[in-house]
Length: 470
Image (cartoon, rainbow, N blue to C red):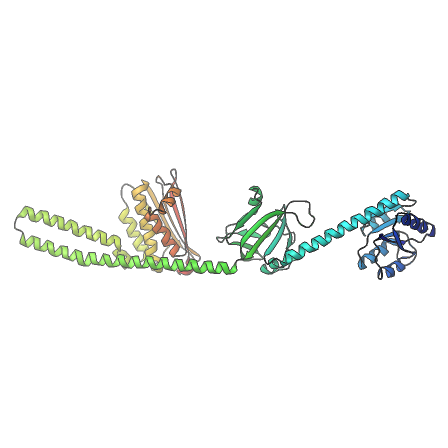
C-alpha cells in the first residue's frame, strides 16, 4: 500500500507540482489543504504517513504553529517548504523537530529523497519508541528492584519496586549518582564503591551478602545483587543494569540468629566462670584446709627433725600453689572489689623490673559491673600473652567509658606476631587466649580490632556499646 501524504500549501502552482511529482513516485496524496485551521481539523479524522507543509500560511496559524498543534494530536513527520532563509524563522521551526527543510524552488530528486528519508527515519524512531516502551514494560513487571546507571554511575532508570523500597518516586532519583548522592555501605556502615566493578572489568557480580542503600537519612538493606553491563534506552555510552532484592526480612533473620549465637556464647562463658568459681572455692576451702591439717599432723607426728622440715616445706609449697591456682581461677579481689580496683591490682601484680604497665581509666566506683568479669579476663589474657611471647618493655592499658561506648585498648612495644597465621591456627584449636578474648567481646556485642607487627608491637582495640551496660 502506497504511503499517504498530506500537502498543506496555499500556492496552487506549488501544490499541484508537489502532487504530480509524488504521484509519479507512487505516493498517495491524501489531500491538499491551504490553511492551518483546515489541516488541524483534518488530522483529527485521518492520519497521513507524512505532511509536507509551507512555513508561511495565511490565516490564524502559520506552518510552524500548525505543526505544533498537529503534534499535540498525533505523531506525524513533517517536511517544511520555505522560500524564506531568515534565522528567526529557522530557529522557530527547529522547536517542532521537523524532518527536513526544502527551499523553494526545489528539484524533483531532492523532494523525493527527502520524502523517502523522512518516512524511513520516522518509522525507525517509531520502532525504537515501541521497543523502549516494551523494554520499560518488561522491566516494570520484573519482580525485583532494578536500576540502570550510566558510565558515571548516574541513575538513568529505576522501576517501581526500587522506588517503593526507597519510599520515593522514580523520577526524583533520575540523574542521582549511585555511590555519591546515594551511598552504599556494608552492615558495619563502612562505605562500598560500585566503581570496583568497572576497575575489575567484571561483567557480572552476584552476592548473597546484605548491604545498605543509604537514601534520605535512612538505610535500606538489599541482597541478591547482580550487576551486568548492558545498553538501554538508546544511549551511546556504557551502562549497567543492577538487580537486587529487599533484604529487610533476611536482615531480621540474620539479627535473630546472631543474637541467639551471642546469647549462647554469653551463657557458655557465664557457665565457665561459674565453674571456675566453684573449683576455686574447692581448692581454697577444701584442698587448702586439708593441706593445713596435714601440715599440723606432720609437725606433731613426725619426730625426725630433718624429715619434718622437708615435709612441712613441701606442704607449704603445695598450699601456696593451690592458692595461686584458686586466685587465677577466680581472683578474690574481683569478687570483692569493683572493676577499676581489680584491674589496678592486676596490673600491679604483673609490674616488674622487666617491663612497665601504665593503666589509665576514667571509671567510677561500680562502673561496668555487668561486664566486669569479661573485661578483667580480656586484660588478664592479653597481659599473659604479652609476658609469654612479646618480650615487651612497656605496656599501656586504657579503659574509658562515655555515653556512647566503652573503649579498651591494650598496647605493647614487643615483637608482635603474624595475625594471619594466628587466625589460621585458631581454626585448629590453637591460640586459645586470642579465641577467648574474641569470644568475650562477641558475647558483649562488641567489636575487636587487632593490629600487630614486628616494628611497632601489638595494639588491641575493643569497642562496646554503652547502652547495653549503663
